[in-house]
Length: 314
Image 1: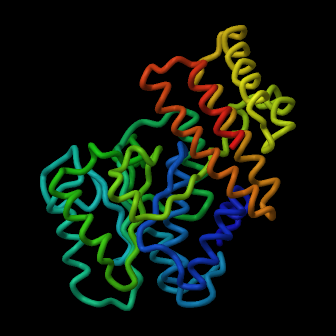
Image 2 (image 1 turned 180 degrees about the horizontal axis):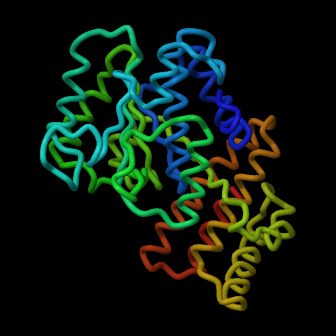
């Protein structure tokens, strides 16, 4: 696996590499989280390992690895509203695009075909976005398209609005009855943003954000000392503490949730060899994603914190 991804996401990187080596990778994968560049890099690295003609080492120079790094491999395609277009639609992944994908599956292939579904746009990048762009380039892959004047290709998380209804229904049949040596990868910010019929047929992995400087987690260390053994009473106190911290410091509740999610991601890395704890942390990280949805639905912050804290105690 790529050493940059290995260092940032050792558990996920090792899991995917092992699944590929043992031919046990699901035919439909969902990568979710807020860092779209890293998710795209992870998808490209999976495509490279699935097609490498040698041993999958990072510096492999076989033809397939070279093509994938250049984003020019004939069997590895990025599908978005602006990539691999077969019609004039500009706001959705269209029925024509999905039919194009399905048509390629009619014939057998020596390659392992990988289709990466995401949203995308061309835009002028801010300083922080340029930092993420350069981080992606450092992993060793090119973007699917060159710059459009002074604008860069930017991957975004897919959602239900990115698919036309007919296109989404056409995709379902192929996911339910997969062809040999075909993998679909969906990049999204939240699993709830993808049709549940696709989620139920896929294996989902949370990809944590690695922007450490954005999150002040020192406050949480004291209150996570009893994790994962929160009892019900402690959970209620923890929820009240979060609410008090938010109001006393005039902090956005979404930032509180992001800090918890980042803290859990760091805890995951520190306990990578503890399989039971790793499974618990992954489930709790997923719950923090649902907490963000609750906040967006204008549910009271204290209720959101209580719901999250009681879930941690399970």
